[in-house]
Amino acid sequence: MTHRLAPRAAVILAAGKGERMRSPLPKVLHPVAGRAMIDHAIDAVHAAGCERVVVVVGTHSPLVREHVARRLGESAIAIQDPPLGTGHAVLAAKAALDGFDGDLLVTYGDVPLLRAQTLKGLFAAREAGADVAVLGFEAADPGAYGRLVVSEGEALERIVEAKEATPAQLAIRACNSGVLLASAALLFDLLAHVGCANAKGEYYLTDVVALANQRGARVRVAMAGEDEVAGVNSQAELAAAEAAFQRRTRAELMADGVTMTAPETVFLSWDTAIGAGARIEPNVVFGPGVKVEGRAVIRAFCHLEGARVAADAIVGPYARLRPGADIGPEAHIGNFVEVKNVTVGEGAKANHLAYLGDGSVGPRANIGAGTIFCNYDGFDKHFTRVGEGAFIGSNSALVAPVSIGAGAYTGSGSVITRDIAPDALALERSPLVEKPGWAAAFRARKMREKASRK
Image (cartoon, rainbow, N blue to C red; front, side, top):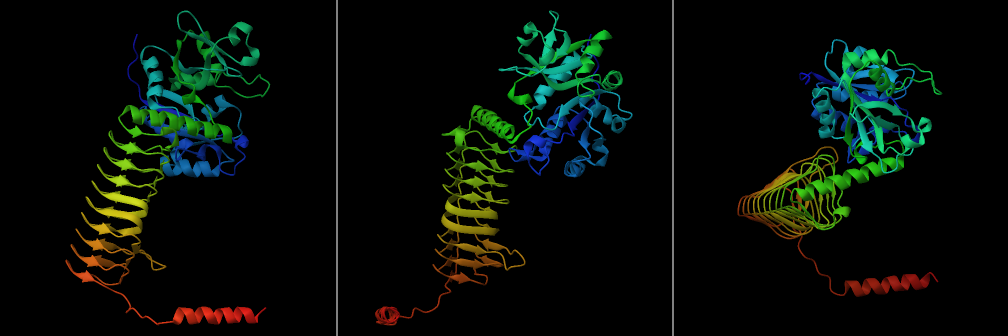
């Protein structure tokens, strides 16, 4: 029997206090790969086809509520008050899902590595006939995890907590992740019958498995990798999640044809995009919003954020690309060059010790060492335009707003305060004044003054 494709919704549980984080920032707002954990969870369920998403938050976390409301709207928020367990948390979302008739996925805001393709495995189990689908994983050290007791017919009979398990059950390596899927109607009906006769007096989501089996429902398991379903409850676990994300993403990029000479030193963000044939040297950090096209080279010790690097461009070493940097094909951005909100044209070069902020550099222009785009007057930012093929002499200061015409030159050490015509030479220097013997006289006077103070 195969179920018809049903509408999909998700409930993301994010009401935990996260006290073990010991941080003023709510747990699910801590970032992994430059993105809040709750946003990773929302991304995953959206990509898995969930059209409606409800996030369950606690009254203690107004920052979480504000964050979710900005992204999904107030209608996507449910409040759990007081917190009485995971089953109770899902029930708190019932009113927000009023009128929904479809499959309901339950997942967590502190599980940032869970991928959409894994969640689709749960939906596949539903479509293949399961009434309830539970996401499990094989633990290297099962420890205190709940064990999944599966029959020979691959039905999940029950979830046994470690402290209540027999020696034979403790030997089971298949563990419960807490993520599950059922029709909304069935899940809320089962939760209405979950009791709280336990040491904590809480309503546990896991109890729905036993209740479903008592009714003769089909309960099946889909599997995930252990790293993927790891929850984050402490700063150490947050660091472990970051490390796992980095390992996984580096491996994916290299499998797609990206060269990394020391991958363990390259740090990526959640949305980093690097094309096949690009080369990334050691100790490079990618902040959010970076796209590097194929055949580009990012040399060692660069930091990029909110930037695009086109094919065959070379960046670094020791370069910084800030938001709005757009480096064109075959352009060169060299050591100790900072670029912010500047479009650099094809084949243009800024190879040494420059600051390019708020402007444009035309194709094949050359920016000399020590050049500064003086873009800020203390109140507003202003734009600098360097035309195609222009040559900016070393140690030039271009005081924005200013435009350097195509093919124009500026003399080294010039302070350019007005527009320069195409193909012109612009010089703005004080006359050289030389005073013979001044330095010797100055030193002698200073030595006498120093001696007189002894």
